[in-house]
Length: 431
Image (cartoon, rainbow, N blue to C red; front, top):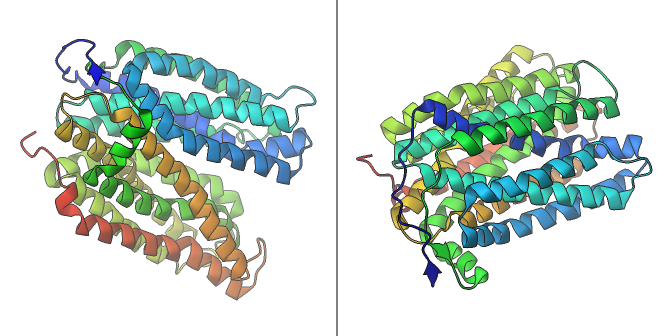
């Protein structure tokens, strides 16, 4: 059972300025995601005096809570169907949580940290799920849906680079860096939110979901093409998350270039953003599935090369960052655009489902990060690697985990994508 809000026809996308307006909100949302797990441990351990064990336990519980609630948030959002309003309601929660997290009160302890992180993650999840669902609902053709995703992910990469650079340049202590981060985040969030909410194309009205939330969540998992796409996305995501968990160790101990780690990361993300327009063109020519498969092949070749590097191979690693960053652009833009294609093909005028589907999508994204760390770091320890050690066997183990495991995982994802191609190649070829 469902009720209909109105019968307005889907709105066709306007010129690129309106696509850019939609993508704008991706910048502060990605900006907000980085400090929670990158900067928070040091801030609360160094300045607030909490033990790393306590900080780690709080963040672990928050991450589990965050991942588990995402599908529920998505399904409940479909009951409203008002994506713009839900994003608007989520952003003040996110902003208040970021202020509490990055500017803790004197004497703030584990309870403060837990409350701030939960506030951030709830606001972030509600905003992100509805923002992605909004993007899936505004594209009228498969090419338009690719462009929507590309604008969003390009702005998100800019947000990641900005959040990575601000706390450490110019050099400063942790609290001052967090203050600079917060001072930039709040006006960016307000400005980008205003642009997206006021200028971006609005999603077409859809019937509202009614009935049991659990039934809708299970229905998504029973939809064979969706679960197939989710499986490939999970395998590919693990392949990307493993080097993310180990890159700082690799740069410091294998390349001997710890002071260049920030530059390498910036190069990687900038290459990802720069490659997005080309992936849009490639996908338009050969289809998203084949373009994504091509990016996986490129990643495998590049990381196989990375496994051969040693001390001082900085130029080669810089080129690897550029090439793997270019492949990242496809990983970011094409899978969610394929999900939007699937929703448009199978549920063109039915009740809103994008929230529930992107809730599961977010769940897999966050589970990948946790699983990758759970695989890579214990494996390194079992192989005898200790950060800062110069033992050759340990360094070979580090290179194997950093570059070899992603090759295996990405090869598995590519094989799965190829085997499921008949189930997943659902683009509108005439669009």
